[in-house]
Length: 85
Image 1 (cartoon, rainbow, N blue to C red):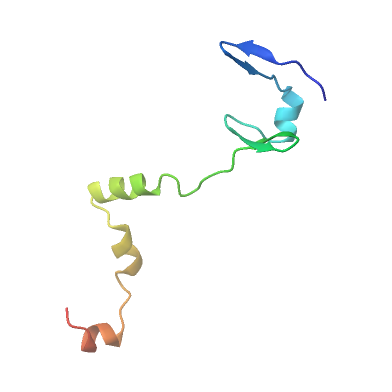
Image 2 (cartoon, one colour; image 1 turned 60 degrees about the horizontal axis):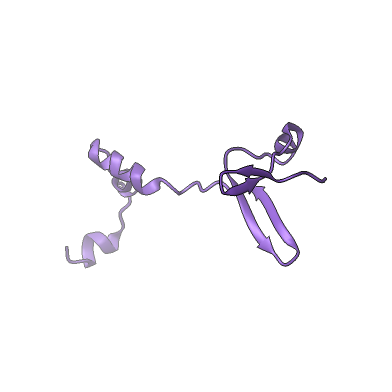
């Protein structure tokens, strides 16, 4: 496919057709990788753990303790008999 670069301020950009956007599942962000023979444009990869820290802080502030919920009932004989708390 051949297209023209369009001036955007001091930069230039390209317009992708709706069919290309749908076919390659482009949304609001893309990853651009410089290669020896050109640029590779790919849909941005999801980062599922990106906001975990913020979510844990919000949970603690709201009185939830995620670690306690996961490990609260987890115990073993070493913890009860041998470990010094």
